[in-house]
Length: 133
Image (cartoon, rainbow, N blue to C red; front, top):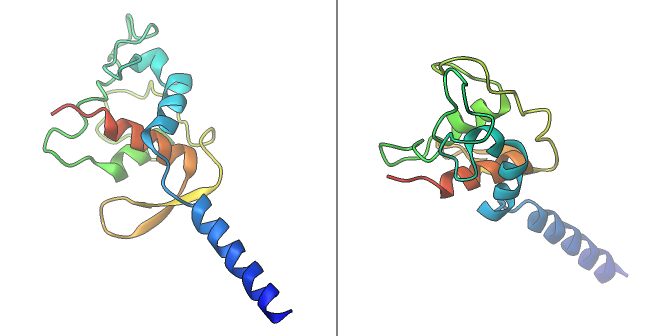
């Protein structure tokens, strides 16, 4: 009996760890297509069908890391709506309420793992994957 309880506990812990893995870019691509492509375009360059006539135009999301390092914390805070400092305008909607769910541990660049809603982490992974130079 003692072994059955121990095995059950190990299985439960393994299931929690497995569900807390970082999502991949393909999971984020689906979220991007549903929520972001209308303005930022299917390739993230800011040329979506709703972008025509927007002032300022939507950002080119393929150019978020010109210095080589992807700004994870800043990207997460902009998408969530927490920080729009330095952005030219407030036209981008806040997606924080739409991107809730189970959390995954995300290193936002300081070595500390931060619990982040899985859809938000997936979107960040996708944006990181489309960076160009």
